[in-house]
Image 1: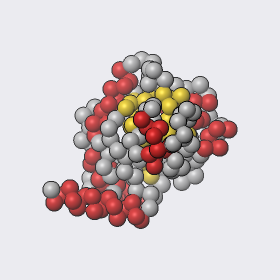
Image 2: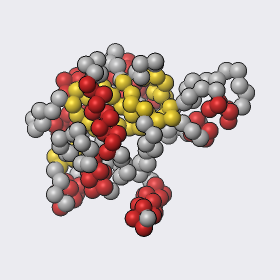
Image 3: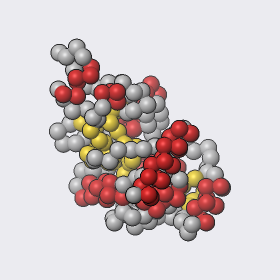
Image 4: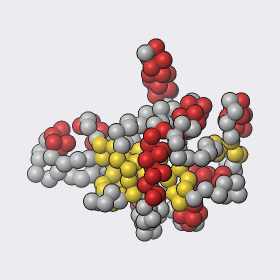
Length: 223
């Protein structure tokens, strides 16, 4: 799986380097076996943001860093380019991706993170709850007909100096409640700009997810 993620990320046009940050020697050995680059980081690091910062701090001088999760074997390289392009705007210091919710069942899945945005594409809030609440419609199944809903795709891009600042922040109340690290950024006054994409994230969190992805990959190869 890590090879699929690595090789798809490497197809993006704008990023200059793909680097795997890990605390597991088996992953580092696997990456080396297919010619990729891996960096060993401390297993005690408290978050993915801290791990990314530790991996690039003394090795990479790039102005923008994109954090790609290792459990996204079908990540779209074009989305990485769209995130990188967002930083042509000097106001953008953090960017992430969102997609439109199209299925009613996605409104109530606690494992799916919903996000609301302002008119400029900045995130207002991330939550595991349903947001916004459509007050004058009794049937939740029809909510999608009345207002757009968005789900978060767990990719982040940061300016280098912003990434360093984020690692100095303490866990925040909203973050602790929702178990969402990006709320720490918002609570401390950082703007998170969003990129709207049609990409549908397929993360591998369970054995069932793995079986589904293997079958999907087999189908794509056959076609």
